[in-house]
Image 1 (spheres, chains in turn cyan, blue):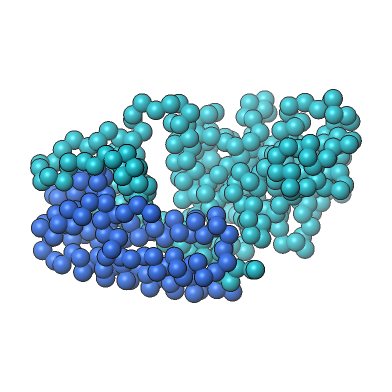
Image 2 (cartoon, chains in turn cyan, brown):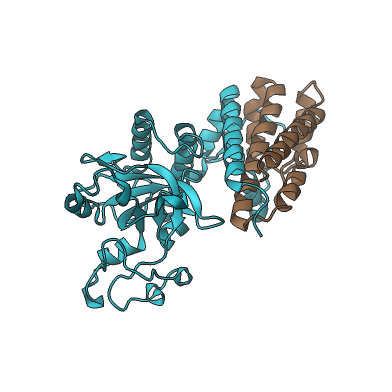
Length: 300
Length: 109
């Protein structure tokens, strides 16, 4: 049954309200801003803190009226495993990205970014994740750097490839025809870890609508083949490195990009109508130091 | 859902019930509920800190951080704030609920 409400619209408005209320709180009450910064906690996350305290039975005696005490140790200054610290930092970076993108992106339906917005988004992602990205790279740009991403199926990687050989998200199926650049390898035994990763985290982009697609065909076909891009879900800040491996979707779908099952799953846009807005910029990483897949904080 | 000491004054569950009338995928619904919950915290905390004398903010925040669910926090606020803080929280809660219900209504197809 189709939801009776436009979830995208509601999310967008609630997110705006959320950000405004947080901003107002921290602007009006410097003690609160300082407190939550030191505690390493977003003010809205107090319920998860409450759950943690109740679960561990760590009821404080701080409610006895006393002069101001030392704060409990900041959550992130404690000894925690490096993996957990990265997860916490990545989550905070994602939240920061999501928060900032709300003010940088135009309203839904207006998919054109201004040069100033493109510049700010590039700086934002550089600061958050250390990745150098841009909407235009080496003189090339897609018709959209911001638009709706639709779900794609797995691509045939070599002759005889089937959906179940992809192991993950098998239920999404495999395309009946080849991707825009054909097989990734001529045989299974010629596949490499990199080629597996390219198919796993592939995107489709609308090369077919580029104004110079026909005039510069051979150059553009080569330039876009497995071109590294960074894709961001502006709702949650989740970011990953993907590779262009297919052309599309068609304009009549109302979508501007396509994402592999793994891309859609990681960005958490694989629900409902599966046409969630994303930001897609080219990655400047000629030595391919940044692996395909999810981007973590402070890794680069 | 774990408790915050002012939950009974705000009763935001009404919004979740309205949300649940629509056939939203779980992930979608949970995300919206999270936004609603966090916005509520921002607004109620703002109300409290607006009425609590500034020199008491640090003390209150430390106690709140240590034990967000403890009803003694309300007792503390009543002792430190001249105005009827329970009524102030209820009023802000009602105002926010009306805003959120209006947003849900606006989002209907």
